Amino acid sequence: MVRDQRKYQGFSLIEILVVVALIIILATITLVAINPGKNFRDTRNAQRSADVTQILNAVTQYTSEEGNSVAGLSALAGTIATCDSANAYAGTEIGTGTGMVNLSTVLVDEFIVAIPRDPSRAASAEGTGYNICVTTGGRVQVSAPLRENNKEIVVKR
Image 1 (tube, rainbow, N blue to C red):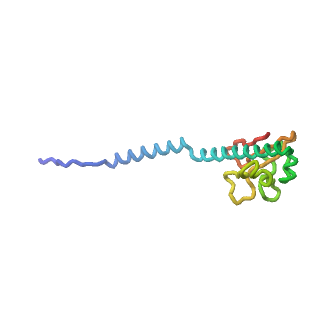
Image 2 (image 1 turned 135 degrees about the vertical axis):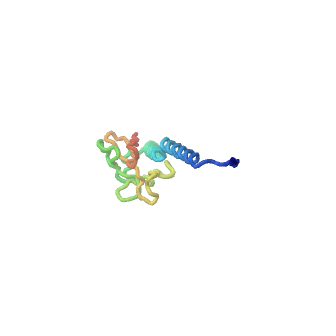
Image 3 (image 1 turned 45 degrees about the vertical axis):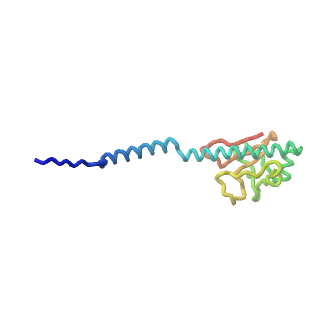
């Protein structure tokens, strides 16, 4: 009786399948833990929060340095709506289109570099995706109605 002295080198099909299955399981767990969709939504909301604050800071600086009230801003930029207590995101949209408040004519260059746009808004759109209104107490409120994950993005001063 002659024994087969050949030695096989390499991996068996079962070993390769087990390794591939483990890699797929680890990749799935990693994607679920990282959740890129949620991270992108959170990033856009963070940008919206920064934009809303930047717009409100420019409006506040304009009204304090120029000695104007919000009514003076309204006369220059267009009609700014009164805030609706039932809907925090109601107000007049900031932009250059009809019925919008064009803050760029008053604020840009002196108080802000440019009026920011909502991250999900197309660059060619007339509106910025941000709303401005005046509360009954005379405070200015800027909001981001296109927010995601039901996060509240409203700033007033």
